Length: 254
Image (cartoon, rainbow, N blue to C red; front, side):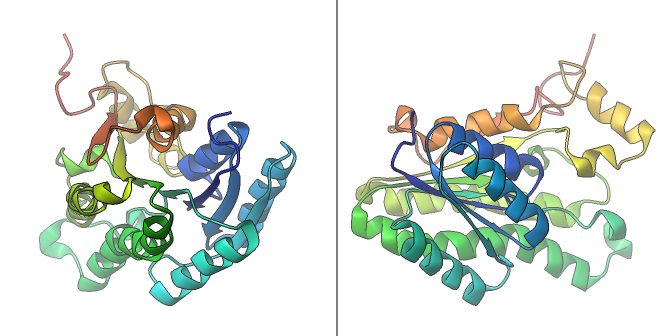
């Protein structure tokens, strides 16, 4: 049990990659705090975690709001005793309002940047104090293949995710002396509810963009997160692990 006796916070843990990460960490012995805006689904994930014998708490949190994030972390420390792992899964694009840049509007830019980049900043800022005091901790930020590849109607999202990768490297440099590892995982096309809501043409295009000809499972992404959050990755920091099947990076088909 790699995480026996450890406490992990997973933001965006009510569904998708975040849920898979939370359940995977619990299976490996961690107690969990789920921070999300979806209370009904978040509480259900906590019930699934408790069924494995681990402790779990749900704390409604909008990661864009630093005051809510600070209260959430304080609540985790009070209720579960400590914070050993933070996984920043909360994020997303403005799919319903996606537009070409010359037709885009500022509030969509603000929303995507705040949800992804500022949300990651807020959560890291709230946990670094406790982690520095205990001189240990693991932070795993969820980036995206979009940080390296170019997609139409996604300037905001690509920018936010690229910012997360740079933020991760810079924060790792500051915290390495405190025994804190900071890394990121960048998924490619992944089989989430959001992906499945895409048109069939886009879904097939995403599958063909990978060397394996399929989408990643959420569990495959979660496995990479668990590795970076474990002691097995104790000498790895400031790195990004791409779980993308070479999508839009190297593979171009035969």
